[in-house]
Every structure is written in C-alpha cells, then in structure tokens.
Image (cartoon, rainbow, N blue to C red; front, side, top):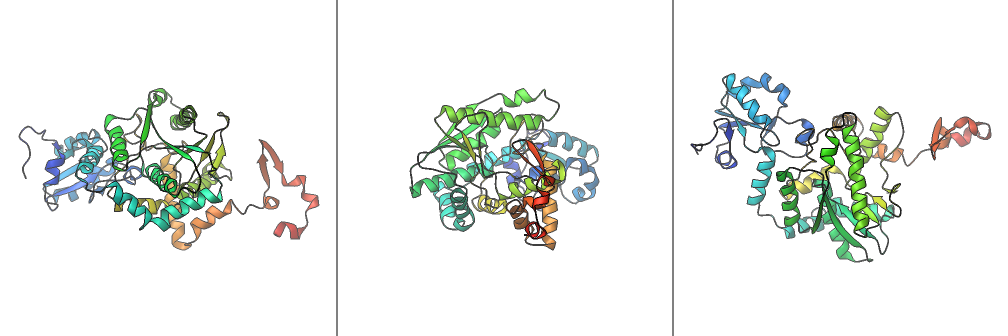
Length: 392
C-alpha cells in the first residue's frame, strides 16, 4: 500500500499503517513504561524518547521506522530528528489515542460478549472477589445509592460492569449512578470514554469541571492537588444526585503498593482503606469494591475483549504519567511495582504477605502509633506487659 500524495512526509495515517506488511517497519512507542502499561499498539517496541538515538542501528534494518506517542506531537518532532540521522522515520498521525478510536470502530465485540466473559471466563477472578469485598467490608446496605465514578480507565469501567452484574442478582435494593467527571480532557480522550460507555451499555452522566486549568499554574504537588480536587467534585456531584456513596476503582495491587510506598517514601505504616467516611461531605462514604481483585486479571479481561481505555490526560503530560489515585508520583509507584515483582521471584507469597501485614498488627510490638492525631508510645503501657503477651 502506498502513501497518500498529500500526506505529510513525516506522518503515517491509520489506514496507511494498517496496510503495511509487518516485515517492512519497526513501530516504536516512545512513551514511558508507565504509560505503555496502560496499552499500546500490538507489536510496538517500547523505547522511551530519551533513549531513541541509541537504537539507530535497529531502525536501519527496516524500510520504515514508525514513531508512536500519545497524540502524535512528540513523535512528529522525533521523526524529523531521525530523518536528519538518515532514518526513514514517520510519526503515527494522531498518536495512540487516534489508533484506539479507529480500532474501536473496527472492533466486532459486543456488550453481550463482554458481560458473558464476566459471568463465565472471569467470574472466579473478577466477580467473586468483587462480591466478597462488598460483603466482607460491608460496603453496601439496602437503600444505598452509589455513584460509580468512571475515569475512563480499565479499572473503573470494569467496576461499572461488575456493579451492573451485581444489580441483576437483586439480593437487595440499591441504586446506581455512573458518574464521569471531565476535568478538561482532550476531545479525543473524552470520545474514547463515551464510545466505551456506549459499547458496554453503561448509562453515564457526564459533568464538567476546570480542574486541569486550575492546577496548571500550581508548581508544588500539582498532581496531589488535582487528585484532592477531583475527589471533592465527585462527592459534591454525587450528593447532588442523591447518592450517599461514591465507588472508586482501586484494586488489590494499588493496596499493597500503597502499603510499601507509605513505608519507603512516607515513613509510615498505613494502607488504602476499603471504605471511608467523608470528612467534608456529611453522610457520604467512599467505597473500593475492587479491593480484592488483581490488576493482571483486569488486564486479561480487557485484552480478551479487545478493549482500549485511557489514562487521565492532563496538561502536564500526554497521559498524566505523573499522578495516581492518591496524587503520588506514578514513577514511584512503578518502582514499587518492579520491587514487588523482583521480591515475588524469591518469595511467591510476598504480595499476600504485604496485604496481610496491615491486618496482623500487634500494637504491643509497635514503638509508637497515632490515634485521632495523637501519638502514643509503647512506654505508656510498657510496665503492664509481660514477655509472653508481647510475643503473642
């Protein structure tokens, strides 16, 4: 297949790319590993932009080198630089988001297929731990109205489908609102969310805010401020709609990573709680129904159904690779992910042990702890304890 006559020599379109023989090109995704974790084009090689020039020899082996970023802007500049080095490079026009939208148009998957996969193939790995978390941590009561908060990523979209499935069981009455806040997404990212909701038959309520604009001028901890502001907007909208709870899509891996991040970077022992009372919105509660679901199982479900989702797309980076559910650096979270992965090679039970560590806290073996903001030392009760009591 040839290239369009009017096509910019530095760009390649979806249709042109789809017509190329795989032996002709090398596709390089120059986004960070953090971003690629959320999805990329099949067969893409992940080489961050900063390392691109050290792989020129690999590019010379192919007729065409195609560079991929999130929206096609950074990749365009890279294509120009590579051509100056004698490489026949082209930028994928529109980037990964464009590919996602085009691929969604061609996808033959249906909502019936998606729901069937939850009921059958992934029932044990997804619905069972979802229902278990709700029961074990008493997340739902009769009469609840839950705002299922959808960011557009794989976790929150799956959560919406699991809630729909739970609703069909009708063990007791509760209501759902599927809430999407647009804090300033690009048109392409918002369209991905809307198209996925349409495909998956999730009746979303979209409301807009100017959070991305508001945090653009903040230099210190903009991602933390962004995360806090989003939480506040979601609570306020949910309450306006008559909800008494908001549900967020944090999963098991988020929990154990948060435990280690708190220890290694925050000098504290804490966890991401399965549910919390709101401090600023009286009568409101936050729940995390994916608390016992593994991220790898979510990815398997996503890939088996050929689904494509987005990360948060803010003004700081193409995919907000600098923020996570709690406003911490994703690069730090990725460090923790890799650390756990390495530890698992030596001890296959390490993930479960990290999770259980915050269930098996013995206050008599803690030097100090805080309660209601007040620090308590083991010395307060030291003379009352026997050796046997402490060792238990």
